[in-house]
Length: 395
Image (cartoon, rainbow, N blue to C red; front, side, top):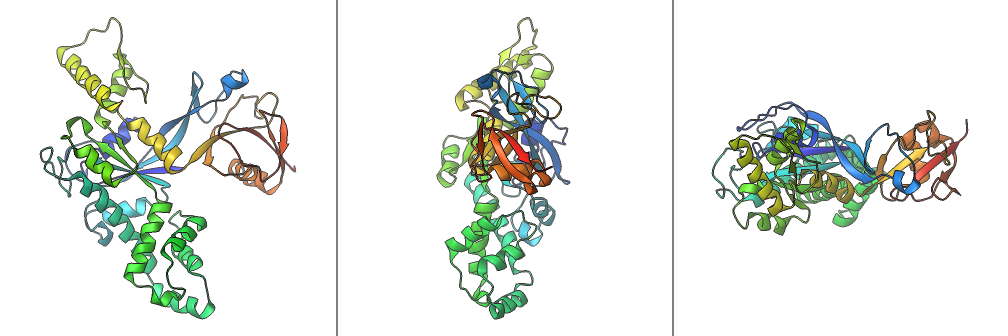
């Protein structure tokens, strides 16, 4: 799974990325600091079954901290987007191509309104943060429309003669964009374009692109720089976005560095931190930590971890499942207890899990065993969050 971190220049995208991954990225206060896409790994939290099952787990692909599984997700920080990027302005072509494989998007905006639409610095309140949300949606939708339009005329005439269905035609046009057939069908159902694709005009294609973006590239808004946002700005963004989280990426990054330096105790996602006993802080350090603590109390934390988890569990509706080879000891081939935690879409079946573990397991699937209940289940068993599953396949 890949989550793209997007937005106009100079809103704190790279700071958000650095805070979420602690990867070394260039962070500066001017547009287009990020030119090449940065890739890193963040983590989302899920309840580990180890305590429920009374075992000590030995994680392999993820960590476990006191019964909380830390599951890795790939994050992609791309170049900033400016108006008319879909036409190649700024670094638009590179930005948009980098997003092809993203499953979901985190749109980092400057909710303080201290950067204009091009990403140039200003003063808090000088820019309307609503525009940061609406313009980015529009740019991605126009980009998708152009993908649909490219060479469409000849294909539409052929489809008219062969009687190809609109959803099939559209799905073929969007190959490489990492959207599913069901997402395309849902978009076509909502827009209901003419069966004759030669009658699809720009407005119809844009409507289809909008729905493809909603279904195939769902977006959450990270309302960054919330600590300096004028009153009312956060509420204005929430008026146009059902999924928006207050974030302070600079605070998150600073706290993680302070934790590494053994100045504070802080766990990502916590609403507060604690200065370690016996630590001698300089006056400027104490003032900075007091400022962070005050704003975390006001906003319920830094929001960075919450944003990642809402993207995974709310936007993408993922659940966590644990495949094992021994349903009695909950171990894999190497004797590791609850070794792997897999994020899969809600509604996935036992066979879907088999294919995710290994193609051959899916091809040779016989049955599965729910390790918690010890019951045998079939290929169409709908997996539940926290399931521990043994896959039985032909050798």
